[in-house]
Length: 172
Image (cartoon, rainbow, N blue to C red; front, side, top):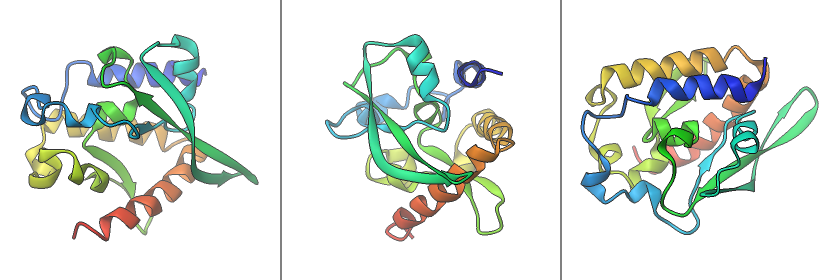
């Protein structure tokens, strides 16, 4: 099955479901969409969506974040926007912001408030997971439970979770 197709189907889980039942961008003047050197990681295989759609509002760049799978090292791309986008073409990380998947030390997947979001998002600073829309959280769990069935994705998540741990140290 085509990876881009899978992501396009997962995106639909978030077409009408958001972190809270209001436009949270009004709380912070869309702070998550601003910044010259900020962007969102693309999950393994997600770059294919942007190769297919080729939107003009985003540029895909390399990062220094890597993970190993099957003896090969993969570089994680990042999607950089100019502060605007087509909502229906946003990367998965944008759709689930300010939450993110996380593997605990036992390899169990959880959904957490992204520690990187705490410097940008008022909800990430003051909300607990249960303060977010229940359907939103359910859809995140559904999407990432499916993605976790892929061994390469799981290898990415191991390194990604270690990366998040570095940020969690600052936000106890």
